[in-house]
Image (cartoon, rainbow, N blue to C red):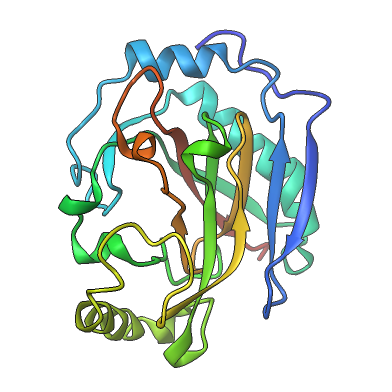
Length: 239
């Protein structure tokens, strides 16, 4: 993967997540040039079938090359971790990074794919979405689970996930596709638009989901589909 460089003019915006003391970090113009990652996405990646990575991601994925992972990890370590007050002296490791292309139409979604989700219930786990398409193909939203008034799930809250699933099944009429707005169970508290070469970082235990409102968002078209790079990192506190 050649010419993979951080943009020296990138911008970092901290956005407070309503009803929490947490922030999402929006980094615009992350890479100096996206040609290398787009070439990988469209011409090199070998996409595994949906669910092959044991996730509910509604599409196909392949692992990103190590140069991208190293760049992302260094950026997170140097530019974001110092902003986390409770993490002075922390270190991090990006343990997974996946080029991702949405392919699943709403009619074929599993129940788990029709609701917001968490990637982990640990405060030390962070999620990254690097958009490789524009606003029209959908960004990401953070949600509040209304019955429990909860946005961030911690380890003691894992049992709530079963409650959420059962509630969504019982209200299937209003959860019959991708969740893109508030419902009787979930309030959309923050919406982050997609933008080419925008990186978004947030804690993985926040309830979140992609805003897929257009048919093109899940077309699976390798020329014009919804590409993103989804990554996951762990923070290790200084002992």
